[in-house]
Length: 431
Ligand SMILES: Cc1cc2nc3c(=O)[nH]c(=O)nc-3n(C[C@H](O)[C@H](O)[C@H](O)COP(=O)(O)OP(=O)(O)OC[C@H]3O[C@@H](n4cnc5c(N)ncnc54)[C@H](O)[C@@H]3O)c2cc1C
Image 1: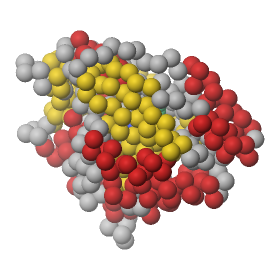
Image 2: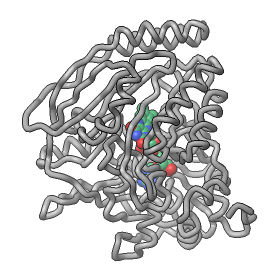
Image 3: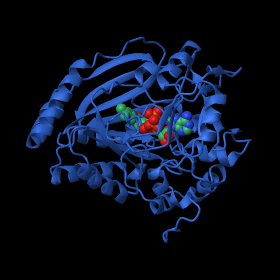
Image 4: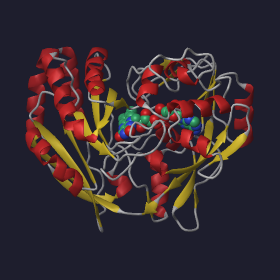
């Protein structure tokens, strides 16, 4: 038995075997013969989505290249390819993704499975860019789903938590390559909150970071420009300072508010421009644990204030900043943004510091604000909550039952979370 760990180290699994198939035939045989299967992308999820005591698959060595469509409007991508390799390839072809998240280490299938998103009022999650999937189902058969072929499976697969089958190729919409100018500007939090309605309309992408005990925040905007080839800022100094502050906070929690006020006074502004795929990702070498609420956009700022008040009131020694972003509404059955534009509020804690109590308190704040959690980040949803929060959950469950009636792709976490989709599971009263 081998050990598998996620990026933050909080999920440890002991799969009976880990396999890295190279051909589609090998992948089909492995899936057909194993009684329990999970797939891992880059292991960046904080929830135990990849954990299994059965077979754990990694698709990073699978055969296949990126194929560009004749009109350069979509590409077929090997599902295990990390986003950074895809976006470098796309740039060489004169193409970019419409949007990206904070980091680009995730496998493209892993990112889509949980609705990974960036920021931008008019821009949906990466899952909104999916145009089709090639899947290996539980019996080892291959299917293609898209809006014309098995549209229900396609709809369910756009955000799937990896519970429907193993994706081995994804058809993804792309844009002509573009450059972005990044502006980082320290400002008083109150100033940002006042200007927010204007900021979200004025910039292609806008977000801010704020330490819960500080009054100053860092505003980040990205806008399309014609020129610029700046490289990322060397971040070792910031990383070293952040790690030192995290260690100090973890060791002497009472120092956290003072350290944060001092740190926020030292925030500095900057401007740079480069190809979009260079600007989007940041380096995140300091390991953290994370939760996130996708709140109806109109209630986002109020929820942020309430979360900060809760942290201060309960004196939680949170050493990381909160991150506030916006994401466009979509129509994906299990997407937290389904049917509503969202404010996305991320709440992090240093990986080696306690996080459970603070996360539970802030999750309650987000829930009261009508939030739906990010599937990959720490949450405590139960099956009945999923049914209440997601009007299309039952339809999603019908698809799951059809393609994997034995639950080969369900691990204990998914069996609980998606109990509504399992034959014979009690029907929650709330449904
Ligand atoms: C440092 C850091 C920064 C992050 N930044 C952001 C951000 O800016 N925005 C955001 O929304 N999220 C963010 N996340 C969360 C992250 O994007 C998600 O956890 C994402 O799902 C991770 O992708 P992964 O490749 O690591 O997938 P994993 O965590 O390995 O897997 C995620 C899910 O995908 C499934 N899966 C993977 N490959 C396949 C496949 N081939 N077929 C079927 N199912 C598959 C897995 O079974 C699992 O259910 C961040 C996480 C970290 C650690």
